[in-house]
Length: 245
Length: 245
View 1 (tube, rainbow over the protein chains, first blue to last red):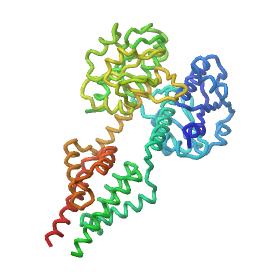
View 2 (view 1 turned 60 degrees about the vertical axis):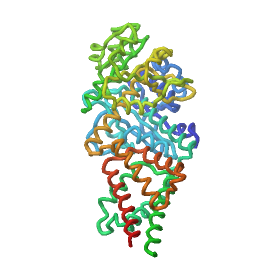
View 3 (view 1 turned 180 degrees about the horizontal axis):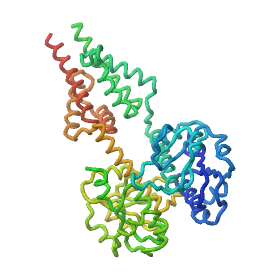
């Protein structure tokens, strides 16, 4: 999928914005990072000269913005819904960082909504119940008063970083290994470690956990899996040739 | 070093700001992420009611802001100087992403300056010559008009992310391996691959590059280096025991 197509599927939804200037600033934040679809739920003032002034060249996003009476309507065609929060909530929603959010959004094949709440009070619990994930932006424990457009900027920035990483990966031919290839990799690794007497098959847990944690921390690329499996095979074949002799 | 101490060493320098509202918004962006030291070089209007209004609670940063007549003076006590740019320049300055910038800043033991230029024209080439690195914020190729406070927000956000990763690492006892330990690791890896006949010592380049690229992509942790070296030793000892028998 091309970069433009990936970003085309993303809708930024602002719920209950009080200050129209923030709508304009959010539109500018979106456009700098390549996002273009803005939806507004019950904005207090819109359209507005303040919004246009703060958009500073992103007024096409304002002209094309869709306005909704209810939050539910604004979400109707979306397959993945991300709710954002700058505050630390004691909650049970599954929580993502902005970077984790970008990873999920960019690999979702359908339309995605990224939802931002009111300037003062954010999203209500009922609104969060309609979201699949809660995205929490890290902030200072003593001052977490993130401006609405600043929050949009951070999420949009992480999406752009994700797009560029994806683009670089394609260009450099850095295709990640498939889940199936990784399962075979782990099996081969384990057998090799048993063969050389490093892994005790009766008590493998602690070591296996360390190794899985290590290889899961990075995404192994296809050529890397091939190199490692070549090393495992060389180790095993060396051993067999010695056993025969 | 504690989180607060790490952020205490960082000074945000705004050069030649035209709109005082942007100074206030930048102060707010800084404070949400835990930064507190603001320096201004030749601001057009300061102090200003617009700045205070947009600071929205970060007015302590404005009250403590230092104002300088020249850029050079504002940098005098700083050991590492990062210049920022939202535009794509055809230039020869070493360029970092915001994340790479945060990694460098947070590991620098001295005072750090992160410098932002004028709203319209950014930093001049002469000003960039005083910077050690140029930080480029990714943006849409067709609309890279990032607001000044938005740029400050992104850099400050990456610093906060870096701090929290660092904090988690300390808590989880995830100490990265030292450069010396890594050099020994590579030597041991290479010898083991030669011993099992996987690496041809006469023609090692291509494979060594792949392996270095792989292990450099992640930062190996101390316990992981120990596990891998244990595996190398087990492989070598196995081989020796077979050779003797």
